[in-house]
Every structure is written in C-alpha cells, then in structure tokens.
Amino acid sequence: MVELIQFILYLYVFVVGIVIGSFLNVIIYRVPQGISFTKGRSFCPHCQAPIKGYHNIPVFSYFWLRGKCADCGKPIAIRYPLVELFTGLIAILIFAVYGFSFQWLVVFSAGTILICITMIDFDTMIIPNGLVIALMAPALLSFFLFPEVGILSRVIGIFVISLPMLILTLFIPEAFGGGDIKLIAVAGFMLGWGNALLAAFIGLLLGGAVAVYLLVQKTKDKHMAFGPYLCIGIMTALLFGDIIIQWYFNLFGL
Image (cartoon, rainbow, N blue to C red; front, side, top):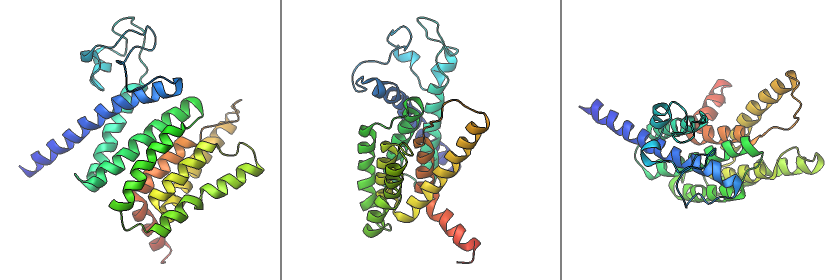
C-alpha cells in the first residue's frame, strides 16, 4: 500500500513536471522573438495554425501525431517532447531529494528557469536578462528555506566566480558572455561560495570537453554557448553539491 501511494505521488509529480515543461517550450520559443508568452494560444511554427487543446497534451501528443503538425503536416522538432520529458524527470529527481516541501518548489522553480536558459542559449548564444532576473526569486527564497547556507557564504558566492570571469573578459574580449557572468552571480547567492565553485568547475569541465571536441572536428564556428554547461553545474550543485564536496574531502582524508 505504501509503495502504491509513493508511486502515485511520483506519477503526480511527473505529470506536473511535463505540463510545466510544455509551458517552458512556449517561453523558449517566444522570448527570443519578443513574443509574449502569457497571451495567445500555442501555434505551429510553420503554418501558424493554433494548436488544438487535445493536440497539445505533453509528450503524448507528439507520438499521437507522429511528430507532425495536424494542420500542415510539417515535422515537429523532437526537442519539444524531450524538454517536457526532461522537466518531468527533473521534477521527480527534486521530489526524491526534498519531498513535498517549499524547498522542492524553490529548487524546481530554479530548475525550470535553468532549462529555459539552457535551450535559449543553445539557440541564440544569448541569456535573456529577464530569465536571470526571474532566477533571483528562488535565489532570494533560498535564503529563508536553506538557512544552512550563511549570508557571508552567499555574498562571497556572488563574486567568487563572476568577478574572475568579468576580469578575464576585460582582458580577453568575448571570453565569457555578460549573461554567463550575471547567471553565476545570481546562482552564487543561491548556492554559497563552496557550491558556486563546484558549479563553475562542472560547467568548465563539460564546456571544455565540448570545446575540445569542436576543435578536433575543426568546426568553423569558434564560439559556443557556455550557459548550458553552467546551468548543468548549478543544478548539480543545488541537488548534490554538499554530497560531492564531502566525498571530495573524504577522498583526500580532509
């Protein structure tokens, strides 16, 4: 009986996650184009036809329609159901860590914003200021819900990565984008300085690996979006930062 209740709870959280993921797709598509994401029905990016409600069921509709628009028949990008599915899985993962709590709500809110930043940065090489400002809300709420991260650690966290990135950018133009610097500054307040360092390390590790791959492939475009890898680092640090840092200290007997 307990297992059944737990399964139902996880299923509920997953459904909530994919529904929100569907809304994230709207934000990801509309924000870079300057279209309001709070007004108007979803529409096909090819023929502009409004998407009927029963054709807009997260994940399921994509497979029901065989990945094509019901009106014009043109293909729908696989990224749409993947974003929905990933948001649902993130919701479950955070629920497994925090259960039903305000902590879950704050961390999940941060996660959804990071997903939007990741996809938009991949598409446009720009992190919208509006999303960085939106991230301030869960960052500020984390001050009250995660008192174990002290105010001094949070203040240091704002500058411990963002300031070196800013200085490096002044000497090497375009080393980092302004959005990357603002993103890690806000995340640093949310994480504290230790986890901010971890987030940046993970981001640099992943971004560096991709950069090496692009160099080996002799890709013509010398620029790459760093925000997505930074977002992965931030989310990892939010969920497992203390565990990873403690494991690292234990590894060296510290």
